[in-house]
Length: 133
Image 1: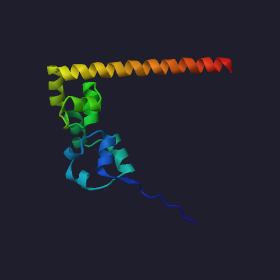
Image 2: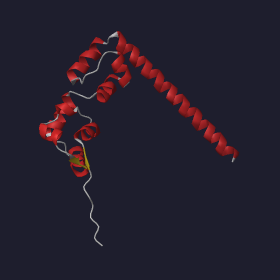
Image 3: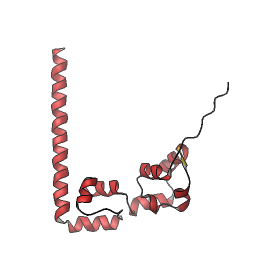
């Protein structure tokens, strides 16, 4: 019996998401074809110039925009940002520092503090449980 491995392929949208780029800004041949695991790994390991440029200047997808601004994706929506932004636009928003951005950054900081507090509490409970065992 001969075993052969089938090539696992993904849709361009999935590959773009894994690469952290905005699909509509990728080359047409990327958008129109499927991407194999091997091709994805090659793009991650040795990105072509178009991918390096997209990562550097954008436009960036909302998860990347949110991370660069230090807010959640929902926070972007609350602030009225629904489209992909370029690095230049993100830098301009940071410089402008509108009220919604300050508010969303504060909210995100509170969420991180609460997450850390709960993680610490859980760790203490587990170490207490381990001591009793």
